[in-house]
Image 1: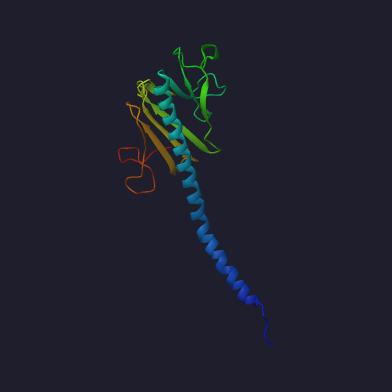
Image 2: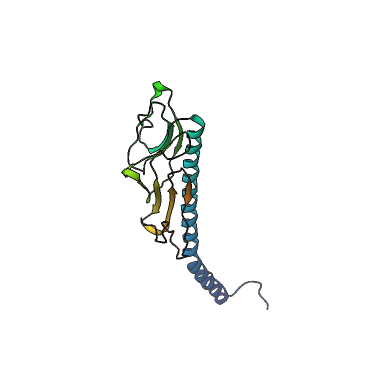
Length: 185
């Protein structure tokens, strides 16, 4: 008599092979997802900063990027949402009576993620002038997840206002800071 099903031994063998393949592939899948998340976050931040630079050029006045809790005042905690605004009276805060308003908001972070800014003169904000230059505030912004160097990404902001997403030049799996040294979280 011929049966049309699988034997218990065949079923257990297939399940064992499936378990080994999933156990081997799952960490690589999670690593790929984390890498994609880091790349997406840094690209979103890059576009956000670039849009602020264009706003400064188009509006003809200083345009700030800074973290905020209340959408009016800047603070120094880059885990807060980021806002962009044109500052017509040059006081580094949004004055609604001066026709200033927040033009963009970005909240790119989830639990375990950090943004760190290292800017000239220890500033905790970025500012672009009407020519698209950084108005003396230049440096870099580093993204990290759970202090894992493999998830670290960095944007470098140059004095002339140009932005660059740092790459892994030495192919060690960690983004370089620009001097062939790995980024630090």
